[in-house]
Length: 103
Image (cartoon, rainbow, N blue to C red):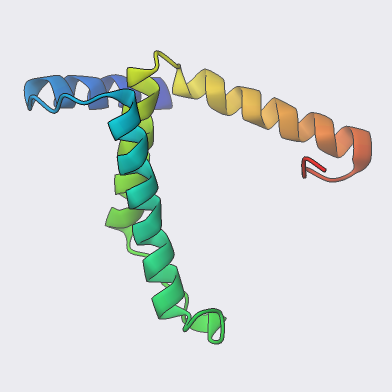
């Protein structure tokens, strides 16, 4: 299943389960879910002192993806196109200056 199909699946799931929300709420939810990933990483790696112990739960990453696709739906953004735009941007930066960073 490609990203567009997943995005459509999320939209249908949210409609069927009456998970209404505003884009602002969805963005706050996304940030919260990313925070859960950070919490897992920080705790498991002892704040970077034990990087060999780094562990992030799969379901937490799934929550981030779910939330991100929900944001895309609310903002009428095609996630697959957005990802391609980002890849193109990073490729251009690497080609121009040898680094994907923005500065």
